[in-house]
Length: 339
Image (cartoon, rainbow, N blue to C red; front, top):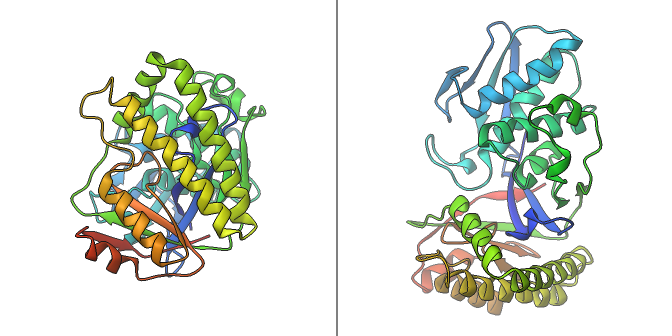
C-alpha cells in the first residue's frame, strides 16, 4: 500500500534549500492508497484509473517501469506485469483529488518491480525513493520539490527538506542513485492529531502556474522574497514543534503567522501576475476561521493553495462540512486517515 499526501506546512517554501515542510501521508478508512501486485509475464503496467494496459510511450508509469528495469537489470531481470489499483480517495478515473496519485503510482510501480525481482521493498526504500524521484523528474523534464514522492516512498507522514537539485543528474542518474543527496531530510513522525480534507466543488488551481508566478515574483522582489520565506520557515518550524508536543494553542498561533505570510505573498505576486489565483481565497479564510472558533482544529489551504481543497488537523474529527454549508461553501469531504 502506497499512501497519498497532504502538504500541510511548506507550501512554496518546500522548493528552497533547508526549508522545513510537513507532508502528511494519507490513506482511506480501510488503510488503502495505491495498491499494487505483480506477476511474471508480459512487461506492462495495468491501471484502470490511469486507463493504461501496457507501456504507452511517455506515460509516467512507463518511465517508472523503464527506469527501474534499467537499474535492476544488472542484478538480473524477469519480465513482469505490474497491476495498480487506486483507492477512491484519489478520485474517479480521469480525475484527480490533489492527494498525489501520480507520485504514489510511480512509487508503487518501482516497488512492485523490486519485489518481483526478489528484493524486499522496505529493505531498499532509499533506492526506491531515489529511483522514483528520478523517474518523476524524467517525466516532468525537471527536478521538483520531491515531497510527494518522498511521502509515498517512506509510506509515512514526514518532516521533509528538499535535496540539493544540483547533486542529481538526470543524464547520469545511475551515479546519482549511489551518492548521498545533500540537504535531504525525510523524517517519519507521529502526530497526536487526525486529519480532515475537503475538496471545493467547482474549484481548480494549477500548481504549475502558481509556482511559476511565485518564481516571477522572486525575480522582481528578491529581498522581499527572502524575508517572507524566512518568516514562513520560522513560523512553520515552530508550528510543527508545537504540534508534535501536543500544544494546540501554540501550533495554531504559528500556523496563523505562516498564513499571514502567504496572504502578504499573494498580494505581492498579484502586482506582477494578472489573474493570480489567491493562495488562500476569502471563502476559504472564512471556513478556516469559523471552524477554528468552534472546534479544536487548525486549518490550511494545503500545498500551493487556491480553490482546490482545505485541510484541517484536529484532536478528533468534527462536523466541519456543516460549517462549510452554513457559510455557503460547497465542499465534499475526502474520507482519509493519517499514517
